[in-house]
Image (cartoon, rainbow, N blue to C red; front, side, top):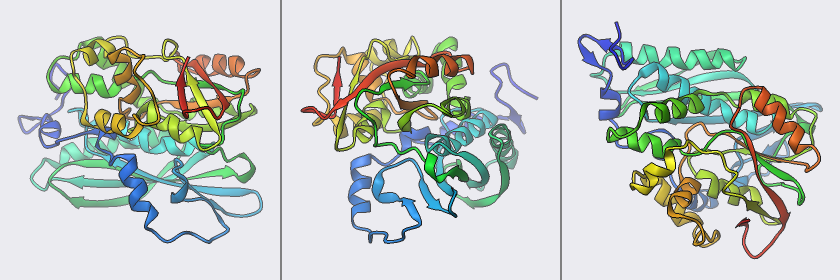
Length: 355
């Protein structure tokens, strides 16, 4: 049976134990990008010609050339819950893990479950998490091939995903062409809304919008890109729009963002002004502040820029002539909030600018 707030009851105990057992949740639990860069820099460099994209590229997934035509995409993602409802958590975590394959221009093929679960917690909760994940794997057109599970103090769930892509159509995250327009397919603010939820201040409509966005697969936006001139793509997740934009700019370009055009969950800015923020957002600010001058932006807009997104949208660099048509197709496919939010220019004094 279910309660009025859609949280299942297991043996008379609400599934609220998911959040009560976790100190952080969703992509906000990620280790900050600067620390990861430092750790990875100490690893031996890959010399395999078949590994087209590896950990040294700060890209969304690894790409391995399979044969003369096709390559395999490998990615893995898991995190603690950001909601109490187990099935919702499973759907969000799976959608997030599958997203990296679409960000590379591929399609998911096989997924493996990754599970950490408290030994004392009711296993029916875990069953619902797995069923939620299985729903999204099926919607993605992939198959569930198995997985691995361990006991842990905090519940965590995600997927290891293998996808396939034509080698000539692999899309990198840091190769945008000057003159291309930037399309963002989902609204910002889910991290801030979930922070408001934890203290009981999230209104029902904002929560509905956040959950709908996180459960939405990036499959449909990716499929719309087929046939268009796309120079770069990434999905916006735990590092927020600011840090992911830094990664996309790479060494040779700068991104000019129009923050007035960036889609957002309407109440998220209000919550930010009330300091309903995340530690991950502050880590993102610390990472980007030397390269991104946000002093001219209102405080709430700054926080939206740094807000960690769980299962966020795609940031796509598309040719200026084709971007409006691509945007219309993405919106018609169901990502109603998608918008053109800026453009790529030749490298300027900073990699991310605001116009």
